[in-house]
Length: 250
Image 1 (cartoon, one colour):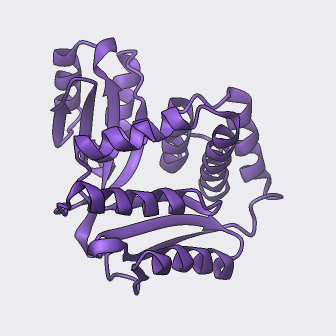
Image 2: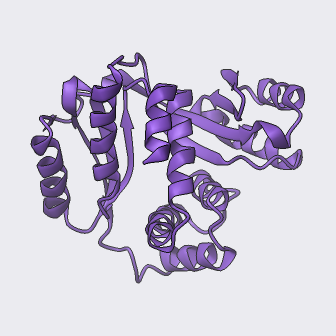
Image 3: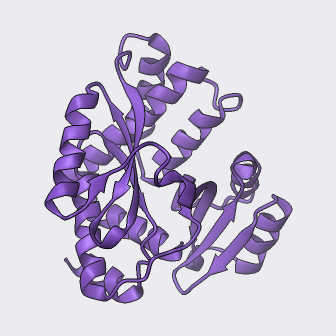
């Protein structure tokens, strides 16, 4: 799991340029708008909106952008035609992929995804063909340099997290979906700001590939993530430190 979280950090750094940042804010705005549309504007009672706002703040999305997205969602004038859809399939070397999208045109979205996968020797699968290999979990990633590691561990345990992982750069808290609010509130009350906070699909078992094949898979993941309708791409690939170093240098 740590490799996937580090990849999220690398993506955030790469998104520092204006064009990428605009794309990131568009995706975050969609999440917030849909959450507000479906569950109301109060993040205390709308669990999904709370997650979307936390993700936006972790990406330094301006407060005005967040508020506008909420108003658009509850106003009902924008985003009416947007739907959420999840595609499942396989990338190169049989790596399992889950692709979460928000779209106003399913035909366009599925055609673009199929084109990328087919071009690289992958394929789309039927619903349920891949999802059984993953579990949805709550994930928080915190920079180690800014916090007391013992304090974070204690907070996570008290908030009913399942696991806490430490490395040189970050602390990763993993817990059940229903513990997200508790963990998030505990961190906020302790003035601890995660770099990443949200729900993710965690693979039950990761696939090992040699660096060259792993890089090929990650290039496909990047191509999918660059599609306007794609919100998140999850895989069961074990992203090693060597592969992460190559991705960061690219």
